[in-house]
Length: 51
Image (cartoon, rainbow, N blue to C red; front, side, top):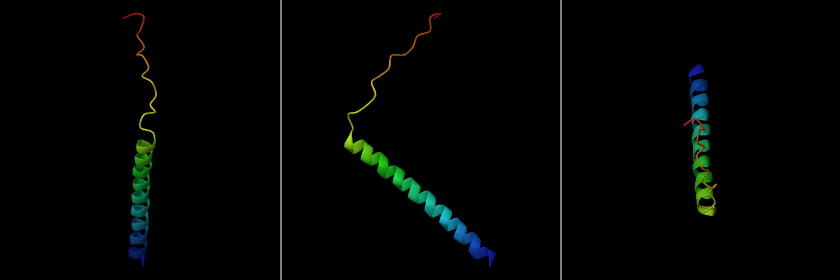
């Protein structure tokens, strides 16, 4: 039954992307709450010598 195969593949694909999306949100949330003050220092903008 090809319809069932297609539905199964689609559901697996959607489930995988939803899980990846949720994991990325969780990781970003954890990184924001654990170390909010650690940032790379602002690098001075490079000025071109001919300007």
